[in-house]
Amino acid sequence: MKKISGVIALSLVLVVTCVSLALASGLGTVVVASTPPGASVQIGSMVVGQTPATLKLPEGSSTRLVLKKSGYKDKVVVVTPKSDKVTNVKVKLSP
Image 1 (cartoon, helix red, strand yellow):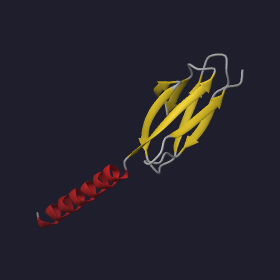
Image 2 (cartoon, one colour; image 1 turned 60 degrees about the vertical axis):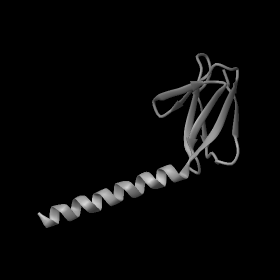
Image 3 (tube, one colour; image 1 turned 90 degrees about the vertical axis):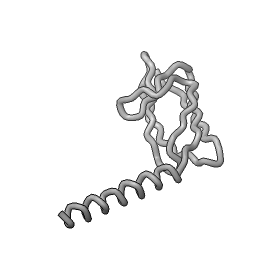
C-alpha cells in the first residue's frame, strides 16, 4: 500500500509540474493572411480558422500550419510565436 501511495504522490507531482510549465509558457499571437484570402488554416487535422485569421499559440514552441484552398496547392508554414510581439504570416498560394 505504501508503494502505491508513493507512486500516486509522485505521479501527482509530475502532473502539477507539467501543468505549471504549460501555464507559465503563455500564448503568443499569430496573424495569418493569404493571397487569395479565405484559405482554411489547419493544425494537424483540425481547422482552426480561415484567412485572415488570428490565432493564440504556445509561445516558444514551433507549430506547423497548413493552409488549404480549393484550386490551390496546400502551403505548409512553421511558426514559433513570442509572447511579447505579434507574429505575422503572409502566404501566397499557388494555383
